[in-house]
Amino acid sequence: MLEFQLFRVKTFLSAQGLLYINKPTSAELLRIVVESRPTEELRQGITWHIGNVENVNDTGIYFRFGKTTKATFETFKDGVFVDQEFELSPYTHVLLDVELGVMAIAKKARLAPKIIGIAGRLSRLLNLSVPLREQGANIEIVELQDPESFIAHLRHAHSILRFTMSFSRPNPFDANRDFVQPLQKCLTESNGDKGKVEMKGESLSSSLLEELTRSAAATGDDASARLRTDPQVRAVTRYLKGKAVMIGEEDVGDMVKKKELIQRIRKIYKRVRG
Image (cartoon, rainbow, N blue to C red):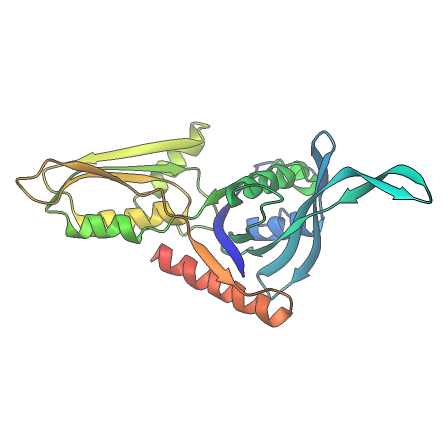
């Protein structure tokens, strides 16, 4: 059984591009970067690669991501002990929907103890790729958070006293909410990367906060709420972050399985987004 974790891929385009006369969209650039199959030595003696790139459908891509290291094995042959050097190249499976900017990475302990560690190496490799550097763009890969538990706390609270939400620069993949978009625009114009907004009151609207929570969860940002479950009980703080979005799959050995998994990824993302 393969265990996949879902991530958001946030592509930030530069106002200047060095190569393309007609600047690509975020989805087009993401596809170009993956199909360029970048290879880089991210650490001495350890080279990371993208390979086995396949188009699953109009927006879905499958590829393998892994590393190559050299290992020495002691062998004995014809009365002689010999040290033989071999290349080892463990890899994992990745599926990416370039339209939504959603990625599923399979767990592989030989690459990193946690899937977030694999995502970090992949992010570094993509940002070093030639197409991305030529465009002056950059990519962030962040964990997709399951907001349902946090939203349940909002819905069942007697009163919500404070709500805090982080936000980042606008990402073309996201259908920006009217009340988030001005904040993102201000952040961009101030040359900032991250921002935070906080609301306080005696009883904030849970329905509006639920919408804000889904927006934060879907874009890889964070949220927290200070609330009371009962008027006689001391207020507590609940946090959005903490529960990753996971998918189990038997295998992705054929195109049918890959297409099915891409559809599951899209469906889960839309549920998180609301």
